[in-house]
Image 1 (cartoon, helix red, strand yellow):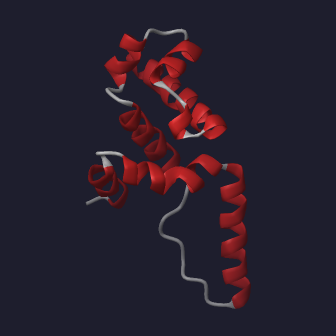
Image 2 (cartoon, rainbow, N blue to C red):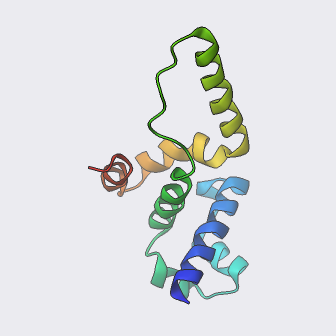
Length: 117
């Protein structure tokens, strides 16, 4: 049950972050849209930054990280077209990824998790 609640929190918060932007969403709003108390929300995530980190880590799994090096102009073009398409589909991840990372106290921990170090 706790894992299901955590999953719902992450995905609901991510949708709100995409819709309104990270800095325009409160923990109270996230809890309210899920019909849970703020206390229940903070049981799973101590802060909005921690929740954003979990949401970005979850989203990060969708994007390949070990892409082959483009060896031609056509491959390079394809690479940029795919990235542009991804950015249009997932603007929260691609537009807010670095600002959120830089603004939070979890920045170094987050990058270690992303890089696997």
